[in-house]
Image (cartoon, rainbow over all chains, first blue to last red; front, side, top):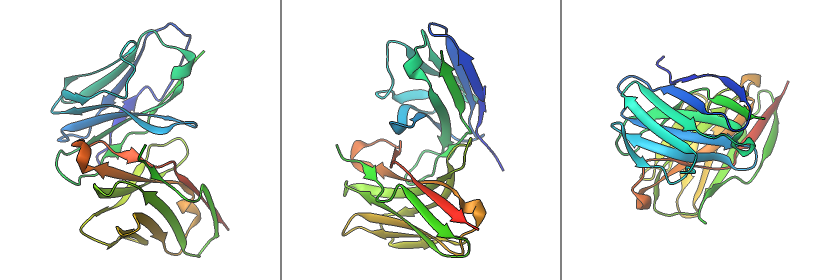
Length: 114
Length: 114
């Protein structure tokens, strides 16, 4: 089965460091989503791309977070500088644009900021 | 604000019994609903979806029921197995926002007792 691939699976770093998370969407999918999952907030949307163009990043702290799609096979989420409150599991999902299409998730990057 | 929510945070059932997981939504403009299953250390996995022009949809051992009158969604799992133990999320797509990103409920943990 085709899968969304995320790297790294785990990341531990000190506050202030730059963190880059990568996602390879399912081939042919033209929408990509970044979500963050915490115990307190559950699954929250951070950013949403269609055909590599950002459509919605209202859920993302603009001062330290940035999301890009350098090409159709790679999406990145960067945090600079990282803070302990950024500790969470970050999920990437991809799907086909169109009404009523399910998103398919990767297995996430578990980020710990010390 | 309007959101998707779940009535029961934890559901414990005996192996072989049927399980019913419930979800309430508040936005009558929502037109698409998805159930996801999330196992420990993994991303949400698509189970089944339903469109607002339907009130029932069946898959393999799973059935989703949609009651638009009371804005209620349920997931029924027949002959529950230990492998069904996970957290289950309902998610909705809100047409009024024009976005294709999903809004997730807080999740229900299903525990299957052998």
